[in-house]
Amino acid sequence: MNAKTAAVRSGLARGVIEFKQTWTNREDAVGQVIFALLFLGVVFFMRDATVPGTGFSLGAATVPGVLGAGIVFTGLTGAASYLVIDREDGTLLRAKATPNGMLGYLVGKTTTLSLGQVASLLVVLIPCLFLYPSLAPNGLWSYLQLLGVLVLGLFATLPIGAALGSLISSPRSTGLIVGLGAISGIFYPVIALPVWVQDIAQVFPMYWLGLGMRSALLPDSAIVAEIGRSWRTVPTLAVLVAWAVIGLALAPVLLRRMARRESGSSVAERREKAMQRVG
Amino acid sequence: MRDPADPAVRVSGLRMRYGANDVLHGVEFEAYRGEVVCLLGPNGAGKTTTIEILEGFRMRSAGEVSVLGVDPAQGGEDWRARLGVVLQSWRDHGKWHVRELLAHLGRYYAPYSTPSMPRPWDADELIAAVGLTEHAHKKIKTLSGGQRRRLDVAIGIVGRPELLFLDEPTAGFDPEARREFHDLVHRLSDDLDTTILLTTHDLDEAEKLADRILILNGGRIVADGSADALSRQIAGEAEVRWTLDGQRFVHSTTEATKYVHDLFKQHGEAVADLEVRRASLEDTYMTLVHRAEAGGETELGLQEAGAR
Image (tube, rainbow over all chains, first blue to last red):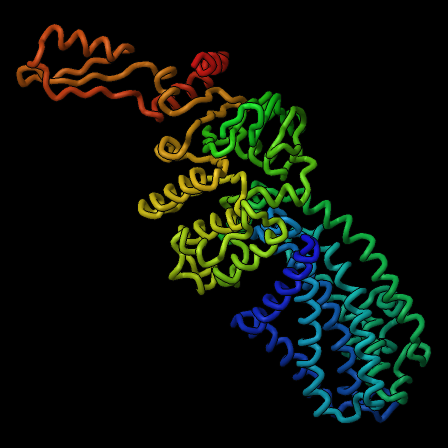
């Protein structure tokens, strides 16, 4: 077997193993469940409110936004913090010391994060479908659209997350992304926000992933709460593809630069620093 | 086997500069196939930098380096597959199970298997070889420090490397684990003809394991030879102890054999409890490092070792 093929296969196996770990390790699984419960709780308490100007449930309207934001959280923050943590504990150096190990590592992380996306999306979506039967009005077509947005979302967030992760030195720096959630109209229709905030929100993928999810899961009557009263399918595609292109252009360069700098002493140095933080 | 024309590692004129600071000033040495070479030196002597350059993890400033016939700065994945690296600071894959990780990492080496060198090493066999059988299905983060290091060693050799780098491999081992580890190193070099380059602060370990010892100080190799050769040439003096008519005597001399001969000639069978002690590797090491720190005399060590 070709060495690169072997590494890709090992990477896939690695991705599945580490995905399973996120659901079998107590701390990881508890984290996932708490995250989902928080979202579900918020959505549940919004069930009686309506989207301004319509009779449509604000709770139902929030579900797609939460799913869209979830893609950004898992994709971007997930990829970035994996890289930071794996650099600190030596996982990356281990990959570097293994033939084609970096290839296997990247395939593995992409697999883990993609499976994680699907799982965390389902954990939120399935209970919401029971809570709000009005979601996904077009049946199969709605789910295909959702799948399309998810795939696009992976491409728009994972590479950028990887690029970010190779630049920052502490996982805490990814906290900024939470701020994006506030301005991207996740919990409240974006048209209720000042126009300049709307403009900023529209630069980032989180708003567009929320919009894409809403267009997939909400009935057309909910369109009144959107900018320009449109699902804006083409701009959604364009912005997300643009982020994917930027990410895919930056990530390989930055990842290579980061990998080149890894050595035993850089791992040891970071360990010292981490010890000082704890102590 | 020890073909001088084809060393596993050849380093000449190796220099490393960080900013305006020179860390290595022309390091020179060779390591042959199947040889266990130990790199000793105080902290900051440049051991880690040297090893990292050989591992291909760090770019050098100047000099010639060849590792398994390849310049590490240009080493590809085929070259990588022939090396094993064991570092001190690994805490990775804590959520994996011991056997699971070894089997997983082994798969990367399968394409590099040859009839004479089947790769990877069977995971269960390897786990037994490093004495982790009863922990094979434990989560890695639950291992003790010594067990974790043995796992690191196992990962380092899972691809049956031709050249193995060991960075302070037995730090945190209990005496029994250390003994077992030394046996493993001997087996690797004797049975598999693995070249091993190790760093340690444990001089006793260096003496037990190494065919040859290199002492690095202030960015230069100040001594190169077997533990015996180094202690003979550098520390020089041996200690002769004996008793005569119930009285104990101690005498230091550079010519122990001659002294003992004279002793017997003079007193015959009245000499009892005779002991001749060579300077230990520790004495040699301290002498060398102090000499180098005193300044200007670092070349002396090289000359003496060279005269071997």
